[in-house]
Structure formats: structure tokens, C-alpha cells
Image (cartoon, rainbow, N blue to C red; front, side, top):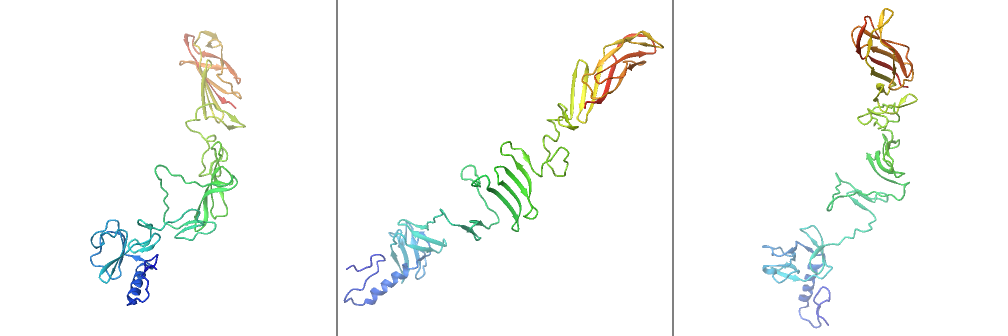
Length: 356
């Protein structure tokens, strides 16, 4: 029969043994050392200078002094001497210095292994529940990269479900953004958590934005609205082809062009101005009390929607332009002078009206 127990190496009382109390007390001391094990430190190589009775240390891998040769053992100070016990794999000890449980894995005292897979819930300084299975109470939450970038993924089962971020104040929702019931990203807001306004919604195919924060039509000038590109004007569409639909501008603000008949400018409000410098003429033919040039015809560089107002300049002091009633596409006229003037000068003409 063995004289010690197979697991804790406790000494057995033997038949006819004298002073059995010595063996019994030795077993009790061994139990006092390793049951509910607490160590002052783990992985320590240097014995303390003044140890206390019952003080236990988990010796490190390179012990010195009185601990030399006892790498990995438990060292207990009992009755003014160090006593050593070799731990077995699986022994647990409370590390007073680290403030946590350590386990002897056969080589070192390591933290208890923790299985973090498929946990039912996790609450960090808060209580998790069946809906909020991860609950964190903290002044801030940091998610940082492990090498390069970092993605926060919120996945939903199908297009009709919701994958969003909800912003609350005192547990009342006031803003939400994400995929709410569709595959289009949207942002909505609420004053009370009950009545919600869709501020912005983005088409997942085109990226076009709609919602209460965007102009509803070209006449919408509500404070705080975002201007739509097709309702507003800027460097890209201020100049270009002017167009309209039922009197509402649909193109650029100003259109300018020219041809052999002169120049024209169109404005989005319907105003049109045509100008031209005509071929040079003289005023040497008598016409009543005046002298006149031959009749000229000015074909407008672009037609008007209604009869325009036409004016002209004879090209010099004493000359003036006389015009017939204009049409929408042309006007006839002559250059007149009070004196016979054989010099050839170019008259200029201007027509103002509407293009629609």
C-alpha cells in the first residue's frame, strides 16, 4: 500500500505507526496550503526578504536563493522555512497581485480560458436582455482597426426588414438612418419618437435624393430646403439653351448666339433682345423734305413669339432710322437724313420682345 495519496500526495497513517499525530498534522498542513489556494504572486523568481507565516508564492521559471531548483513549484513559508509543492495541471489559484484567477497548465500559471463563442448575451456595466443581447454602458465606445481599415456591418435578413442606427434622447427616438423597409438608404427625424419625417432618401440605383429636406418643385423656396440641380442655377446651367414648359423655365437662365442676321440674347423669363449692324448706306436720294437710303430688310437672327419693339440708329449725327411695322421675323426700314449725305455708314438696329 502506498504511503501517500495519489493526487495531493498526502501522507497516510500506517498500521502500528508511532506518533500518528505527526503524519496527520503533516497532511493537514498540506491541505491548508493547497485547498482554496491563494498566492501572493505568480512567476516570481526571488524570495521575499521577510515572508509571513503561511505566505505562498508560485515560483517562476528561473528561481534564485532559497527557491533555486524549484521552478514552477508552490513555495510556502511555514515555521521559518520554505516548503515546496509541485502543482498538477488544472490547479487554480487566486493571484493577489494580479487580482484574478490563474490556472496551472503544466508549464505556467495562465489566466482562465474564456469561451466567447455563441454567448447568449453580454452586458458591460449594464444588463443585457433578449432583444438587446449586447448592452454597453460607457462614456464612449471605440472600434479601431487591426492593421488597416475597419468596417461596422449592420446586416438584415431581407429587403423588407430594417438595418439602421437609431438615435435616442432619454429613450425616445429622434433620428434614424439606414435601410428601413427597403434597400434605399434614408434619414428620418422625429420630435417625439412617434411622428416621423423622412428627411432624405437615396435611390439605390441612381443615388438621387428625395425627401422633406429637398425642394419639392422649382417654386419651393422653403427655408432649409436643399436645392435640386434641375430646379436651381449655377455655373453649370446659368448659360445655355433657354427653354420653358407652360411658362416655367426648364433650361438655362441666359442663352446667347449669333448668325449672319445679327446677335440675340434670350432670358428664362421670356425676354428676347436681337441686335445687328446692317450694311453701309448713303442718304443721297431725295424723299420729300428729307434724303433717304434705299430700303433695307432686317431678318431677325431668331424669331419672336409676338411683335417686338424695334429701334435703330443711323450711324451718325443727323441720321435716323425709319421703320415699318415689324413682324415676328423681320422688319423693313430706311436711313433718313435732313441733308443729302453721300457718305456710306452702317446703321444699327435693336428689337426687344418675347421668345415665348
